[in-house]
Length: 252
Image 1: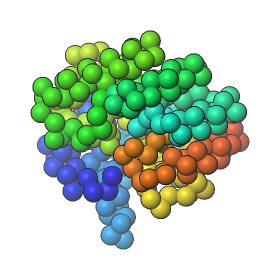
Image 2 (image 1 turned 180 degrees about the vertical axis):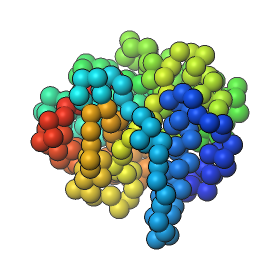
Image 3 (image 1 turned 90 degrees about the vertical axis):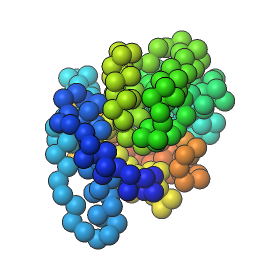
């Protein structure tokens, strides 16, 4: 993921003032990457007002809950491990699935729905959208959507771009299809090679509040090998932290 950082400032500069949730997410991606780059250089990162502006799950906020979300799956080992941890805690989550992985593991996509969780679209291939021409992007989104619907019987209505970086074309295509683009307000940085379970849990659950959208990954297809193991180990800690705070996780 960090290798993409230099590409994002040009995106944030080119965006007009955001008006929708998805546009707010696109603008915020640049701010988040810039903050990460500054931290890596030991510099002070500026505030990220887009987080406080409401990149959260309205449904979750309405019932005093958070929305725990997982990207990049399904995965033959990571997804079952995450599903087991969620079941043990009686928690629900939303899984942003990648079409090419659903084709490989359709039974796992069905298992997500059978467990009472929601499925959403993360594209058919996990690519930086700024590099994908409009027609190719339209084909990618439609194919991924069809794969999820065919495997699970559920037509996804939520969409998150790979790396959380929406292009204007992606936002327009999502609107045309009636999808809601969704970012996150807190993440565990669990995709990093040096991430450890305790640190993942502390990062994603710090100052968590109703309405937050939490991001983790149940797969290592596009991240550090074996990262799903650390996420699976961190998840009970995250769920315990939510329980201690009197906050539950729901599916969107």
